[in-house]
Image (tube, rainbow, N blue to C red; front, side, top):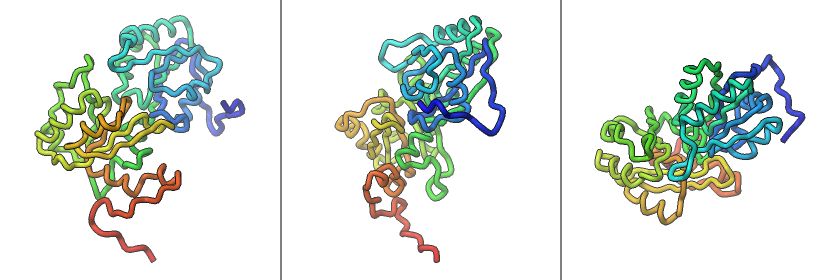
Length: 283
């Protein structure tokens, strides 16, 4: 940790005793923390953190007690209500409480549920947004979720419901018809059903798919595949959650925008991902 780091330039908000700040830690890379997140980490008495929060991020709060409250599909996890009530209890003890969540707390992160519970119990809160994995994680893979030559719409969906089952509330035919690019959180467990639903709804089996696991960390892996071969390719690659799945032509942009590969000395693929011919160079 850089003990000499200060936050110049303005009067930064103070985390007061009895308050809970719900903060997004970003998709993994500690460098993607916001300055408000760093400010919160350096003030907290207690940090309640999720499974996807990197240990290096907790190093910014050496003065705080660190409590793990991670929830991972298929593994023993704290119940959501217990986590929310623990936040209430700590606030009532007069602690300066930081609830640190991977990505953005309001994007499939249960942050809204926790905030509701806190407000219902009279606990004052502050929300600190974070970079969501569905945007930042794909950017680290060289995939822009929007590109004006590719798509004018993007839909973010979750791959399972509260019970961990494939969500039955999503209208897959409408999503397949209405969104040029689909970004799926927590979809690995039900990837076979999701891909079959999209193909049945009319998406071509040849449509590009990218799966990014452990996004923005040193363990990040990226699989480029198609809707038709996705399930088999995932099994062969041995990919495991956490993962972001991207469906649509924007995946093709990775062929020229894989900036991490270029940083490692790999040459960009000599292709035009959109198949329209290369633009003329500017004079």
